[in-house]
Each structure stands twice: as structure tokens, then as C-alpha cells.
Length: 327
Image (cartoon, rainbow, N blue to C red; front, side):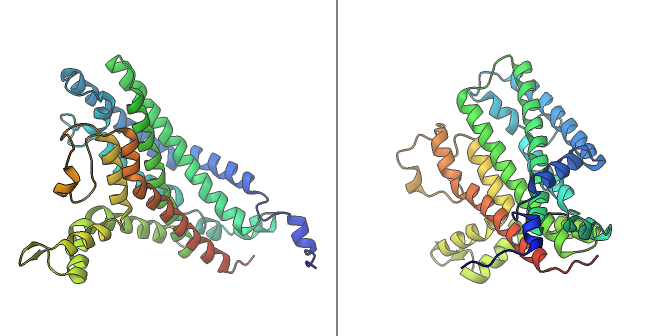
């Protein structure tokens, strides 16, 4: 016979009571906060300038590619030395960290966490609501930016994107949201681990710098050499080294996101990582890959980003549940 719930549990109801209220309140705070407005203004301004210059370049070379809207995201127009996707890949972790580094520790420092949990709101609903609200705010900002760039391309180029271009750009949007979800989960985790918001922000930014600038050029070769030996053997390249390097490199969410963006926005991409002659047998070099095959190609990368988000949030959930909260 199941045990009856305590009066306190009956008063609170379901463990997810209050989740909707937390999500709505936190989403409104994040979208209307000065920090988010400043970041959005800077990102939107840079993105629109890059898109404007990209359309100028495309109009001068129109007819050279059937994927004009994909070129809008991938070319680096003069005098700017980077493309739209490079800018998005660079600022997405920064925006995600700015949204989540003080999700929990700010409540501790303001001594409002005990008051919130005194209401009919469980810890589960509070932590999940804060994470979902930040992911929703990030998604709203990203979709708005995507629509602005798409509309500017439509007005400047005078033609709409093809159905395949639209599907590829939607896939890129989904991959960017998953990529941002990883960094939001990491920022929330550090906000649970560290009581000082500055420490949480620095820890998250330090991890981003490691993955963005040092993982591929320093950490991956070092770990691959330790595990599989030198890159060159007596008979040529060490195949075990190449396979190990590919596995180690894809521990980084930056690599997973870059692979997904390359396969979606460059339709002639047929393989991610080392390409062997057997993979090119029977293929027309330079011919675009069907969009369905591109999604099959990036399925492991998308799955890895979503799985990393779930695992990191689960760690934050366990740590938060074990913390002592005093009035």
C-alpha cells in the first residue's frame, strides 16, 4: 500500500508545480534586462553589417553559385575578414554564458533562494525553469537575428531562397540552438558550483577559450600522441593516430558545431574529418550533396550536442539537489 504524502507535499502538489511561472518570469527578465539588450544590439549590428556587405559581394558575382543564400552566410566580404557563420560561432558561447553564469548564485547572494523555495515550487522546477527560460530567450534572439538576415538577403538580392536552401538554413539554426544549449548548461552548472558570479563567469569563459583556441592545436595532438603514438610511422601516416585525434577533437562542442555548419552550409561536403579514396569512389567531385544526406552526415554531431546538454544539466541538477539552503 503506497504511503500517503505529507501535508507539505500535498500543498505543493506535483514536483513540476510552478515550472511555467518560473519559465515565464525568467524569460521576461532575460529578454528585458540591460545586459541582454546590449549584447543583442551589438550582435545584431555586426551581423547586419556583415550581411549587407555579403549581399554586395554576391550581387557582383551572381550566377556563379546556385546557393546564393548559403553564400550569404559563408563568404567573408571585403573589408571584413570573417563570415557570418564564424561570427555566430564565436558569439554564441559568449551570449549563452552571459545568460546563465548567475542563474543560481545570484539567488544565493541576494538571499532570495530560500524565499522562492518557501513557495509551492520545488528545486526541480526552479532549476529546470531557469535553464529553459535562458534557452528560450537565446532561441528567440537567434530566430529574430536569422529572420533579419534572411529578410535583408531577400530585399537585397531580389529573390527568395530555394526550398533546399531554406531547409539547410533551418538545420543550421537548429544546430546553433543546440550549441548554445551546451554553453547555457555549462554556465548554469558553474552558477551552482560557485557562489561568486564572477568566478562562475571566468570559469565558463576559460573553458570556452580552451575549446575555441587551444583544444585543436595543442590538446588534441598531445593526447593523440600519448594514446596512439606519433602521427607518422615507418610506413607513412599513423592511422590509429588520425582516428584517435578525430575522437579527441570531437569532445569539443566547438568541433561538433563546426562540422554541422560545414555539412549544412557547404553542400559539396561529403565527409567530415579525414577523407579516404574509397569514400570518393563513384562521386562527382564538386557536385552538391542532397540535403537529406547532409542531415544524415551531421546526425552524430547534433546528437552529441543535445546529449552533452542533457548530461551537463543532469550534473547541475544533482549538485543543486545536494546543496544546503538556509533562510
